[in-house]
Length: 508
Ligand SMILES: C[S@@+](CC[C@H](N)C(=O)[O-])C[C@H]1O[C@@H](n2cnc3c(N)ncnc32)[C@H](O)[C@@H]1O
Image (cartoon, rainbow, N blue to C red):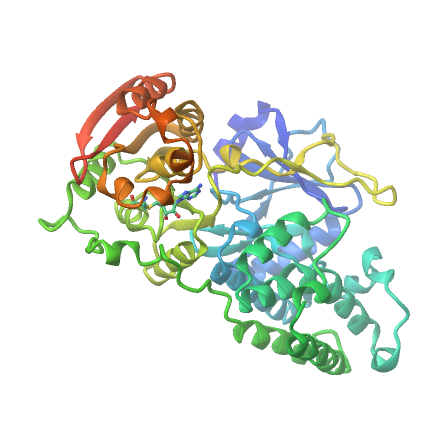
């Protein structure tokens, strides 16, 4: 975190609100610093939570590092106190996480409950939007969701459920609140998407998680849709639910048996996407070499390595990363990497490899031809906004807003976007220009490349209207890139029908 000296310098930066839907406070940017203003009347609780976290170093369990500022850099805003959080470099959303990462976020969250409850604290909601990833490491960022355990029962949203019947009539107040939180947040946002993934329905899980984004949708994922056509699965789900309800008969605030059972059921879930045609790409091409320079490497591997070592970018965005050979190379050379691919099996493999090798790679599933639109929260009449900074912010921000990096890699992907998916060079170059703060290393694959001529059916747009693709030339691509990059160097790739275009913006 920045030192006190930095605090004085940024006093004049106007606050830029970040989205947060909390009645305790709101996060905002002040210059480069991530602050959270705490609303009047809330400071004593937040201060008590912070003191417990500090005294027991609960931050080591993945809670975002946080401290109270001795004085607000924005005294004109009537917050009762101001917190500073360590910033997570890249914001990612649950529907972008590959299955294994989703499962990791779920495990991390339930373990956090277990840890906090040893210290008289708990969380007031249980959903994946509380979590971001720093590389492969989950971070709990919603600090004001942490509350004293005794305050859980009075959370208004946990007191609107149906009257307890059956075994629930025997629960204590804490069990009622915990189950309601589980039912309203864990199950639709963690439990059911993971169950879909366990059944191999990753695409549907991802789509539904996006469609039911918290506070932006009127509906949530249901048991009915999750187990549609799977009677045995539905039955197991109902039995598990009854078991959990039984475990909540345990008295006292901690509910260890309940949380232990939820944790074990996540541990038993296999959320990884099954192998795809793409997920052994480097092995199939005999290019799965170690990422230390060697004579076995192809021209392309040497060319990208040379660009990375020349520019030493702090951050790299690898578009169409596949299983991330180049992402891992960049990470080993010291860059923080975001890797994006459409193929979930490849991205899942990359996540597990980066986790194993402790490399700073954030692997995300996304389709470059369908960028995420901004998504706004719904406003609820009974939950008026308390923000001192105003409303109208998107709940989900576009990738170009969140994932810009010093260098972009776009290797063997432009021909997929153009010949396969029908994007033109202007669109592709504009996207690359927006995402790259300074450098771009993009590979151009000529139309007579053996991979293209050998399987023309694979490149659907070209196949459907081959004659009208005369514009697909390297010179035309370079012309479009020149609108965004002032210098462009051409370097051989491999085979000869491919080349690397090393592009930089002015003032490098
Ligand atoms: C030929 S591989 C290249 C992998 C790696 N960049 C390299 O050069 O070694 C192309 C990759 O682009 C991905 N891809 C194709 N179209 C995409 C799209 N619209 N969005 C995201 N990824 C895409 C594929 O899934 C595949 O993993």
